[in-house]
Image (cartoon, rainbow, N blue to C red; front, side, top):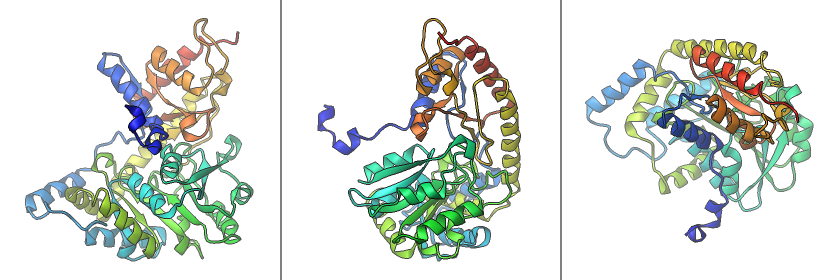
Amino acid sequence: MKHFLANRINALPKSATIAMNQQAIDLQAQGHDIINLSIGEPDFKTPLSIQQAAKKAIDAGIYFSYTPVAGYADLRAAIADKLCQENNIRCEPSQIVVSNGAKQAIANVFSCLLNPGDEVVVYTPYWVSYVAIIQWAGGKPVLIQGKLANNFEATPEQLDQAITSKTKAVIFSSPCNPTGHVFSKHALEAMATVLAKHAPIFVIADEIYEYINFVGEHTSMGALPGMQDRVITINGFSKGFAMTGWRIGYMAAPAWLAKACEKIQGQTTGAPSSIAQRAALAAIQGDRKVIQLMTDTYRKRRDLCLELLKEIPGFRSNTPLGGFFLFPDVSDYFGRTDGHVVIQDAHELCMYLLREAHVSVVAGSGFGEPNCVRISYAVTEDQLRAALQRIQEVLAKLKMP
């Protein structure tokens, strides 16, 4: 009965990360000892103070009704204050829309901005859902490819060459999922200089990994001179506050676009959970020390992984400056065989590692870079040591024919 489905859903790919994670879960359910390095989720529990705020909201007995579509007024005000104090982004609470995760915020933006055929320049490698959401909204993604030698950061010249009369927007993440790269202030200024030469083009700046930053400085595109009315800042609570299941993300945008996103959200999901919003308010107003402790742990794991990767011939990686992923180039293994299986691409390598090493990682093709795999280090150091040891042992069996 698939032919009864709309063309747009038939054309929509499954999320590569969710699909690989599900395969790992299925094998675990069958009794296999799988080390899952495929999912982009903190392994920390939501901080206790945030949990307690949710319990307090339940006990208060007054947060059981529908909330305003764009979120509670006090949460939107707290987000606007956070953006002003920490990001130097000046905005009013009316410019904030709180959504069911940052993914919905991005979908809202593209649904409101794009007409059929409008182009969006996508810095590549990209988070897996960008391209799918753009296409679902009727737009056309235009990829600009970063190089490993340049920490996967596409150049201003590439951006300039990609812009056409149909370009409506540009999207990137910083820190980047999957590469861990952080755009410097200089890089963002160079991007802004290119965009200033063209008719109004909007920038969707995905800052969901903002707090998992190893360089100590985060620059927001929306804080640069002349960019405030052209930047939509996407953020949320899932990564930095370890609140993935709470499903709270948000956007800060020019007032006219925030109103449009509020309208579409009102016709689709409505507002996020009332109790999750109270937890988010406690998170954003709380102490950042617990966030720093988590970030310090991620940094230690990154350093450990980079050392362990040196023991695996053919894996070439940049040094992530944030997030909790490695994105090594593994193309040296393409064409190799163990005498039974020939590894043709990164997807086959990932499946080989899952079958033979019982380690789950994600092929880079879902992120726009088919020569790479994404490895999450949001697991314990013991699991990382065991996983990379398994990978090293299994890959040693692969030889050129």
